[in-house]
Image 1 (tube, rainbow, N blue to C red):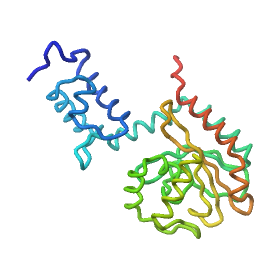
Image 2 (image 1 turned 120 degrees about the vertical axis):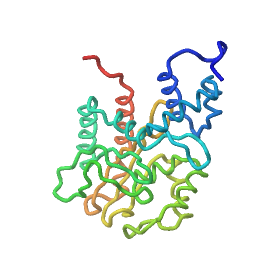
Image 3 (image 1 turned 60 degrees about the vertical axis):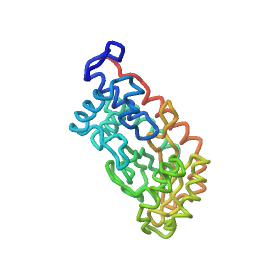
Image 4 (image 1 turned 90 degrees about the horizontal axis):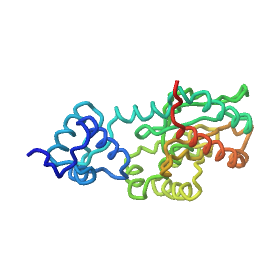
Length: 261
């Protein structure tokens, strides 16, 4: 079967492949090949052929239910775009001002599978601080950013993830009970603020707020943490307005078009 004159013939195979990738990335659920054919007005045989090529190159993959989802390769590309060097100076300036306001370390964490990854940070000037360098992976269920990210999922998806997490104890207050964690996530979802009350490291507290895209989806978490001998969780959370202002600045920064050289 070939494309008929009445079907979508505009654009090359490359354009259609990019349209497929864009549709998969923007969808709030895994799309089937039939869904893609309907949404993009591309004949089903063409969609199947393009999907085979795209999956062979590692940009998309099929999940256990037969839906098409982004692959690890595409995930890393997306993170690279967000972490592009062209915004590094502005991003660091925002983080540095926030760090000076709170007088503690501040940074950006992004989801990577069941972990959160530190993608940028500005250290405080205090001699006593937790050293978690850029690129460090931290657990999702016991960190402020991880819990905030988990709370962004629907209840059904949250429970599916929680049921498959080890929920190992990392510190004195780590939540290791799935039902208790779900209650905590429901509260975080309402407040849109993640907290870590000595759940990841004994003697350390943290909080985080979401950085969203123009569709309102969480793409990163802006966090700050401090040792309890300097600040309590309540004292750290008092800087919520400054955190949200910086998160809005980061959102605007991500949406800036690339400057022409």
